[in-house]
Image (tube, rainbow, N blue to C red; front, side, top):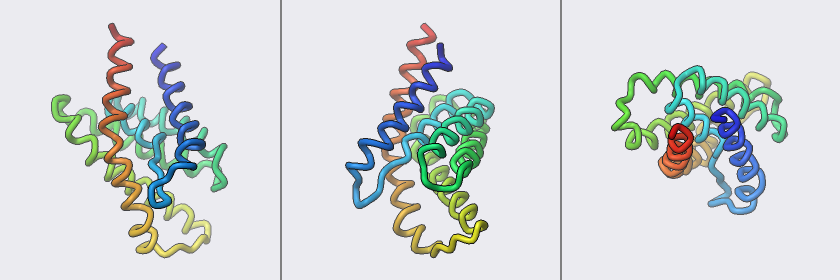
Length: 162
């Protein structure tokens, strides 16, 4: 049941990201809800769960994007693994306060990995410009939303346990 719920959460986040958030952007930016869910699941369940949810949600996102197939799967798998390894290093009582910081850093890393993958395929972009106009604002946006999404997912998963 938990696995089905996690898949449903990712699908709902992707649908919201592809429909509502494309229409309602702030300064042309939108948060990566799928990435926030991967980070949350990884912090709650560990590296294995983070890697699996990152790969599957990234692959699903790749099917609906116009970019290179597999880029989101690779980056979200990496982010899920890295954030999942933090689960053992973060005290559970401090996790809520660290969620925005972890999400901010993970969002930046996610953007950098995507940037360098595209760069390795010969697509030239100005890194400093992308950092200033897209990477940093998107990471801030993700980190602002992350505690609310974390609380929602944590409560839903806790209710399934009881």
